[in-house]
Length: 317
Ligand code: G3H
Ligand code: 13P
Ligand code: ZN
Image 1 (cartoon, helix red, strand yellow):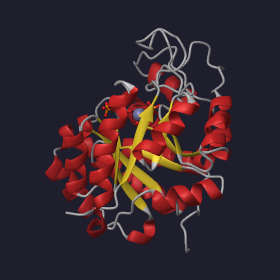
Image 2 (cartoon, protein in one colour):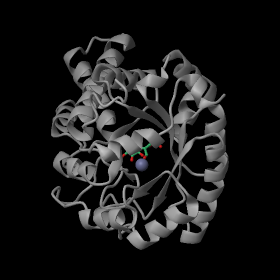
Image 3 (cartoon, protein in one colour):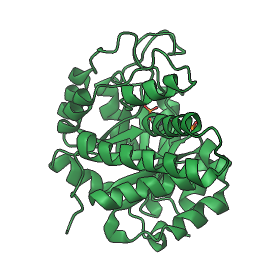
Image 4 (spheres, protein in one colour):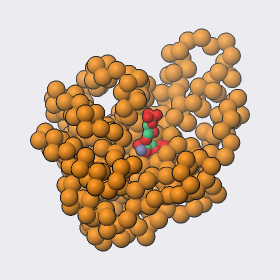
C-alpha cells in the first residue's frame, strides 16, 4: 500500500509553507485509538496540517495490520494535509517496512553511530524512500540536553552546523533533527529556565538557508498536568519542559517540525488519575478513556494554536 491511497501527504510542501510563513507542523505521537482520533480531531477542528508520529515500540504495541486499519478507518483526505511518520526508525528494514505499509514520512535515527555510518545508512533510506516520494528525516548530534540526573550521558552533544551542512549535502534528506538543548521525556532541565542554543540554529540557517529543521524532545510539560497527577496519587516531582516562548522563537527561525509526545502522555494520565479519584466506583473504560481522549484533544488544540501557530494554515483553503 502506498500512502496516497490512504489520503496522506508527505512533508515536503508542508515544511516549505511552514518555513515561509513562520509556523511549524506539530508531530504528535499516538499509540492507540484514543490518541490517534484525538490528534486527528484537533487538526480537523483547527484546520491545521499535522504529522501523526508513531515509534517502533508503539507500532509493536498496536500491531502493523491493526495500525493501518485504524489509519484507513480515519478516512483521511489529501486536502487535510496529514502525514503519517515513523518516529525514530532505527534500521533500514524498519523504514522500508513503514514505507511499504503506507507511511508518507520516515525518520532514520542513526545519531548514535559515527558521522560516516550515519551518512551511509541515511543515504540507503533516502534512496528507497524517494523512489516512492516519501520524506526522510535524519538526526545529527545527541538530543540529550542539559546535564542533569535524567540525561543518561553526562555530556550533551550539540549539533555542529558545519557537519550538519555536509550531512544534508551528502544524504539529500528532507529535514534534519538537531540537538540544541531539548531532550525527551518529562524531566528535561536541571533548573527549568535554561535557554535553547538559538546561536546554533542561526548558524545552521546561515549554512543551510531555509532547510527544514526539526526539534525533538519539545514538550512543555505543563504544570497543571503535573499538579493534577501528583495531587491524585502520582509522583512526578521535578518534571519540567521547554518554555513555550522558546519554542515559539525557534518556530520563527528555521524550525518547521516540533515533536511532542510527553505533553499528551501527561494530559492522558492526569485525566485518568483525576477520574479515578473523583469516581472511585467507576468500572467503565469508555468513561475514563473518553475523558483521557478529550484531554489529549484539548492539549493538542492548544499546542497547534499556541506553539505551532499552524491553525488555519491548510494550503488552498
Ligand atoms: O521520541 C520518542 C517518543 O517519545 C516515543 O517513545 O518509544 O516509548 O513510544 P516510545
Ligand atoms: P517529548 O518527550 O519532549 O514529548 O519529545 C517527543 C519526541 O521527540 C518524539 O520523537
Ligand atoms: Zn524524538
